[in-house]
Amino acid sequence: VGRDGDLHTDNCDMTALLYVSSYGDGWGGFTQINTKGVLPKIIPPVQKRLVAFPGNIIHKGFAYSQKDAPMRISLTYKLKNK
Image 1 (cartoon, rainbow, N blue to C red):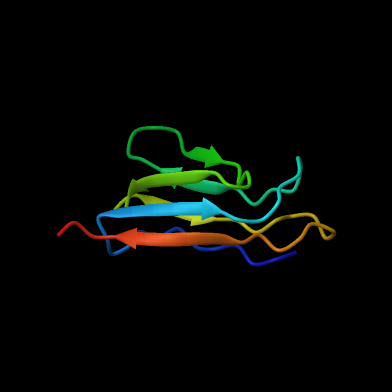
Image 2 (tube, helix red, strand yellow):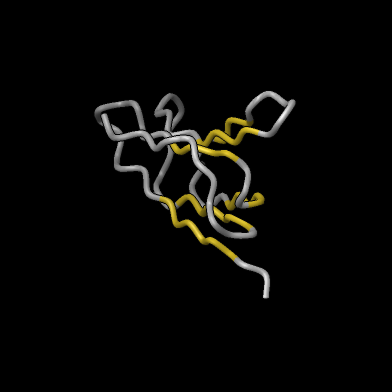
């Protein structure tokens, strides 16, 4: 329905995702986080959930997969150490 992101890293020390949209079972919209030597982590975008991870870790966001689901909205903070 929407457009999935691509696997990528961020140019920052930490990435923090805050899921804003409502979420229903079966909508998809997961965030995939890949770490070397470990199976990918699949995180459902539950509303008000905050997920933080090092910015150099490969990750990808997926759009909701159901045509009647609302738009998946998240806020992304890319944090750098001072």
